[in-house]
Length: 98
Image 1: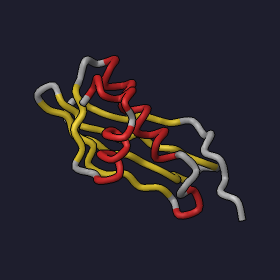
Image 2 (image 1 turned 60 degrees about the horizontal axis):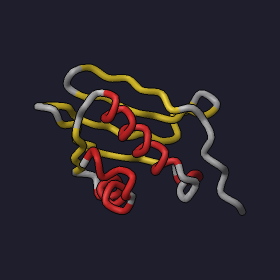
Image 3 (image 1 turned 135 degrees about the horizontal axis):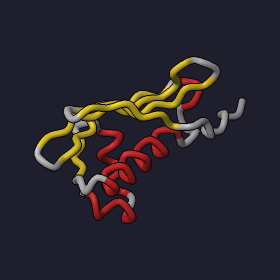
Image 4 (image 1 turned 30 degrees about the horizontal axis):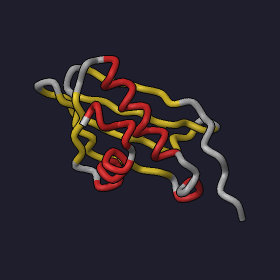
C-alpha cells in the first residue's frame, strides 16, 4: 500500500498566546502542529499526523508553514516537540528562525 500524498491546504488559527496549524481532509483533521507564543518566540509544542499519512510529508509541511509564519512575524522558533526539533535542525534553510 502506498502512502497518500499530503497536498491538502494548511489552516492556521491563533491568538497572541499560541495556535494551531492543521491539515483537514474530507472534513476531518488529519495533521496538526500546536505552538505557544511569548517574548518574540513561538515554541512548537506538539505535532500529530494521522497514521495513514505518516511518511507523506505532512509533518514537514506543517513545520515549513510555521517557519514561514515566524519569518513573516519576525519571530524565532523553539521546539519542545522532538519531531519538529529534528526537522528544524536538519533543514539548513530553516536556520534563520532558530
